[in-house]
Length: 235
Image (cartoon, rainbow, N blue to C red; front, side, top):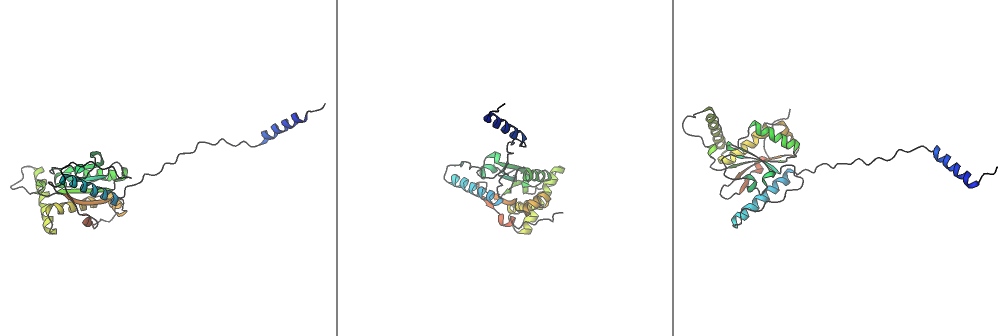
């Protein structure tokens, strides 16, 4: 019986293909997530400087309030955390030309840093890529003025002790009270937290003392002093 040559060749091709090892189907490429870009502390501070300058210019030109500026590239949930005085009649976000949601704000008597403030700042630095903390004080702060007479309650005694300590430190440093308090609370903040110390030492975080003029809204930055903040050894 004659076998058609074309049909025979086709059969051979099928048999050869069946003997070839089967390659697994290619799976979809695993998506690669790019790491978040971080906002360098110096860039965050420059953004705040420019924001406050625009606020002051608008106020001087009679067009206050100035429009808020766009968020800087790389910012996390917050552009800055601000520890300020509960007695200060200004809004830190407005003063810095930022939206309220861009500022993690702490208001305490005399801009005093307490344990809860330190804990929340540690979380923001670790989880929200926070790179800048500002301690913002103001002149003529009633929270820093020692009251006359005997405190009428334990809480009043604590406030009195803090005010006396702030005044004593200002005299020792020969600085105005508001500036001395800003410097002192920055130092206390960093010294109280090993995670914050590591962030500062690694140049991932900047802690800056500053003072705001209540009538002008101009911020005086004491960054040079902040660069020399003493760091407690990391254990």
